[in-house]
Image 1 (spheres, rainbow, N blue to C red):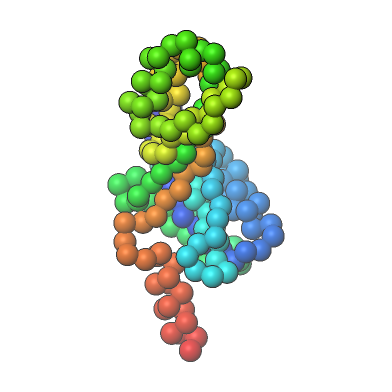
Image 2: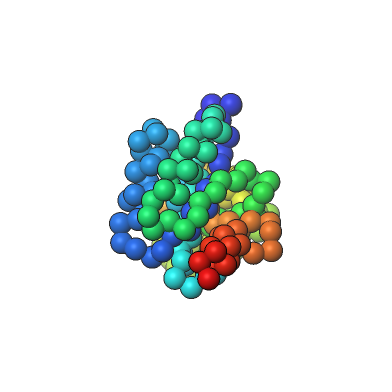
Length: 182
């Protein structure tokens, strides 16, 4: 990653309509910005879905333009971008390890405990470990386990995030819109 690039997190709220995800990701494609992670789920507002999208950019203006283009989509309620300091962020990592290696090397179990990860399944072939936390911690555990040569599979989820404010930013927007229309 280029040193001058910064990771931005976009929170996009939309109605639950087929095809909106494609429209949102197409904005990134047209601007030639690669999406690092993407998570879509229901929000705290009935009928509104929340997209948490991360992307690297060296140009904040580019991110602002992407947000504006996304907001122009008919089914998008609100979009905004944030830096990591403005959000509470978590991800999950799953690690499938070779059980014989885990049993033969106690340092592997110590590493799992040191990273505050949890063993969630063990069978004679593989051991599944789960870790919740920030991206850097998830990746660091992977690197530590990979040094033992015991990792069979590894994946991490997309980022989930909430703002540090008391409510979803879209709530305020919807309240204002309702007042204007009421």
